[in-house]
Amino acid sequence: MSDDWLVHLLTNERYADLLASGSGVEPGPGGFVHLSSPAQIEIPANLIFDDSDLTLVWFRPEVLGSAVVWEAGDPPTPGMLFPHLYGNLDLALASTASTYRREDSGRFGEPTLPV
Image 1 (tube, rainbow, N blue to C red):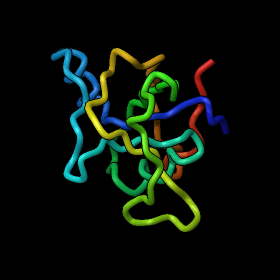
Image 2 (image 1 turned 135 degrees about the vertical axis):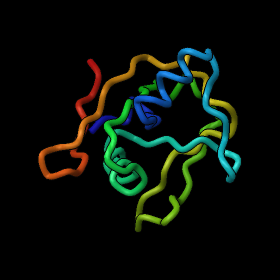
Image 3 (image 1 turned 135 degrees about the horizontal axis):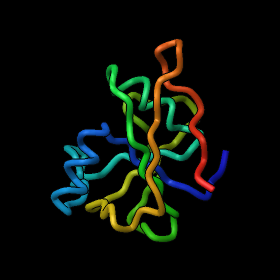
């Protein structure tokens, strides 16, 4: 997997709503927006989201800058830190977005990286 990307996961409906409104993703209760590296996407996808397909919003790390801090997840995953963005996530900064569908097993698998 590549370290060239940071990814935010959204339900397809939430992504469409944000695009239609022109608004970004606001920080949650911890004061940050959850992001993942490509190798981590499966973890929050399978822990947090129910039976809906998702939209993966792909960002180059350099466009998000120093507002990204790598910290323990909740719940913690041993030996793994997750990127957290302290501030609003402007979807206009995204390089691309892709649909992320569950596999036949009902779980999310390894995502396809953008080209």
